[in-house]
Length: 145
Image (tube, rainbow, N blue to C red):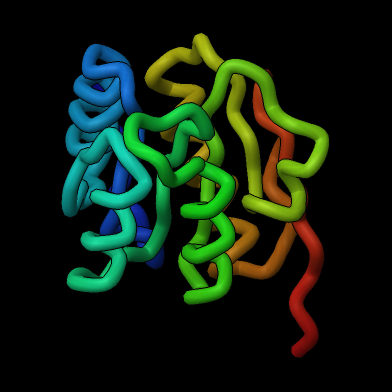
């Protein structure tokens, strides 16, 4: 179990992961780290329904999903709605910077997942570059003041 302070600006998460064991581990890790996991779903279609119905601060998104909608489509939709996106996938694609603020490679440790979300929070809420985390690629661009 991880003992860290509660996040300050990214609180409500949507986990989109088609592997049930990975989804369960991610959900449990993030809940124990103080995040409110609104839902954990395995398809893009289910994710879009949750995004439309709930206030979501960030997505933890795998690119390979069940259903017909791709993770890329979900990432673009979330980005267009101002929702922070953390990709968590086997291999970060070349266009990951167009889809998300960061990409964490699988497999990863629970602390790496929490650290990746903290990095997304630093970029989103504090408008500054995050510290380096092993296995995490970030795509931070400062926002105009």
